[in-house]
Image (tube, rainbow, N blue to C red; front, side, top):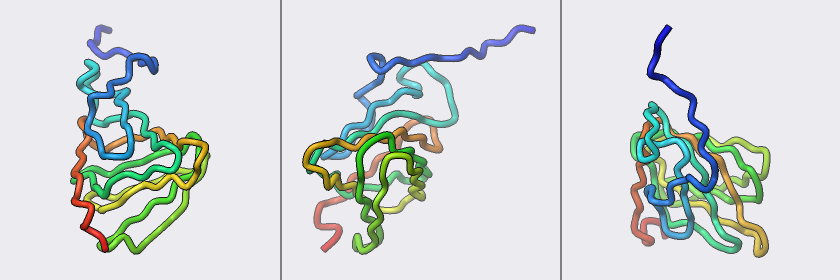
Length: 134
């Protein structure tokens, strides 16, 4: 049997920091076309520094699933940022397509880190103006 498919192992030193970003955070692609990996989904890491928050953003048509590796995160979402939930290490998070949201790191000492999988091969990041919410 011949096939062109292959398993890819991507080490942290190979992660692509050139992926779509939101102010206040860093995304690093691990499974992405930019790394020569053809896939219907995207995977990578997401980190927010201690005491920081992201800008308000959404991911267009993409559904996002995240697994919290470390730290604690507050997530705000909704038309006015009125909904809030807290996720900690070991939790899974689902962010529906087109939902405006932001992530807040309430810790002053520890970043929070997530493993993220998106429903398309290339991440979509739509950064919204800071005054989107009151």
